[in-house]
Image (cartoon, rainbow, N blue to C red; front, side, top):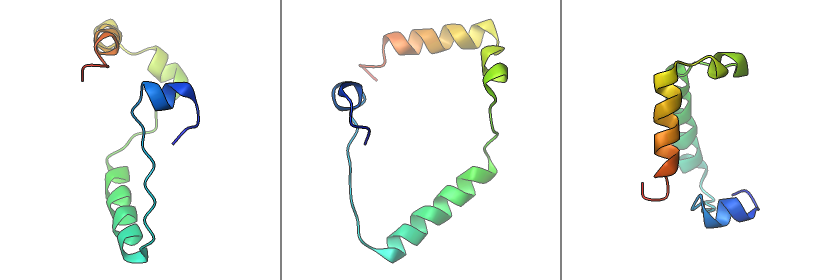
Length: 67
């Protein structure tokens, strides 16, 4: 959890602590599998995304509290 007002009031973040090495290993394995399908995004590439993508981002930002 980030300790700022936005995190607590808008982002609905929660902190959960679990002390279980087996569970931690399972989560790490899931993360590693997901990482294979990820692409690193450079800031300049993000800024150059198409107009339709920027518009969609803006629309979802407007309703993010309801999602």
